[in-house]
Amino acid sequence: MQNDALKLVVIGGSWGGIQASLGVLKDLPVNYSIPVVLVLHRLRNQEGSLQELLDKKLPLKVVEVGDKEPVLPGHVYLAPANYHVLLEKDHTFSLDDSELENYSRPSIDVTFTSAADVYGKNTVGILLSGASRDGSSGLKYIFEKEGLVVAQDPAEAEVATMPQAAIATIPGCRVMNVARIQEFLLALHEH
Amino acid sequence: MRPEQEELFEQEVEALIQDILTQYGYDFSGYARASVYRRIKRFLGQKHLPSMEALRERLFADSFFFENFLQEVTVNVTEMFRDPTFFLSLRQNVLPILSTYPYIKIWDAGCSTGEELFSLAILLEEEGLLSRTKIYATDINQKVLRQAKEGIFPAANMAAYTSAYYAAGGKREFSSYYTSNYGSVKFNAQLVKNVVFYPHNLATDTSFNEFHLVVCRNVLIYFNRQLQERVFHLFDESLVSLGYLALGKKETLAMSGISSNYNAVDKSNRIYRKLN
Image (tube, rainbow over all chains, first blue to last red; front, side, top):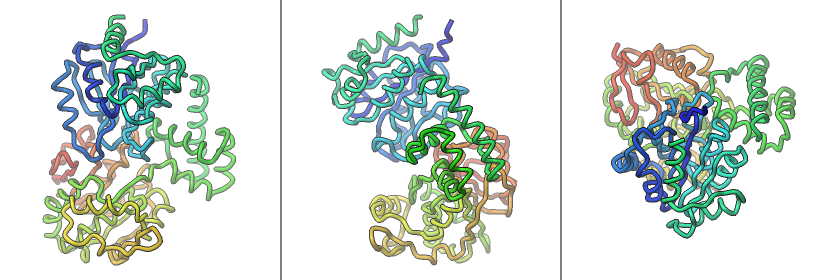
């Protein structure tokens, strides 16, 4: 049996992504079996209030990614401002302050790609609302590794650019609204 | 890459790391792999190299090409007054204590292209300490050290640096520190008059002096836990009693073996002080 702790949910969002990710994660139980990594574009050099906000609103424990810390179930790991988040083979995080990707650091593409290299077909990639093209090539990479990929329904997204880019890039991309994405994540937990 | 291709790539990287050590003496074995893989893939793309084999051939035939590889694979992205609150805290919490010493020695470890070094020098100048401070600026890479010595940075970055400088408690006109020319600016060479530049490899080299302050920001994130631990001990050996250690915003002493001998002076800005 596949150990759920060795699966990973990676979620990316930009403009409108905070609200959408709250919607996606709000009913996941405190013992949700798959670790969740959340990459949201935010202002550079902004301090950590987003983590507090999310932690207050979600049953799951929300923490900022710490360098070389283990990836554990029951947590939502938020990418810190001004760092890319990478995954290591031993299921720990590494932080990275290299060049911006798609004008962004953290970049969704960077984390999606790195997650797929480690978790392969056990990667679940979800791309939410955003006015950016970041995330679609990383989501495609997860898809090529036979992971599960989902884009938020552009009709519902606050800004459709980001999910639309993913849908255009990946023929097999699932499209769901926030409520469906949440059900989908809950279904993964129950297995 | 397919999973089996990815596995092959990773094996080739391990072999390359061994051969770089043998041929050039640089030890990457303690580098965190996720970043190494990513940087090498990026380098292959930039140089239009079709395979790891093609990379190997170039690297071991051409030491200039290797120097270029070294610069790209080790991350050299940096900025002036990065995290202004860190520099403000240094100014308010650390420099007043350092000013009680007749002579101050600082190690800027992993100084890269010099943006952090010049930021430190400006801070010291404004607190009246620069003339009695010696800064040792080191990096693994000689090419970036040459750039750091020049103090020439793109003019396009100056707007951001200027606001970061004021957020860090800057006391003068930022533009008084540099002259502009052809899309770049050159910082006043007086700022680095007392700076010694030389190559030092945190992965393999030893302690070489005693310092009142060691600044090493966003370097340790590229190392695995064991190498991080080595470097923490290296810094510990290199600090005087009551000396200060400054790390990057997301780097912590908490997990290391030396932490019991350190106090956090400013926890959120990762400034620590050695007890004895």
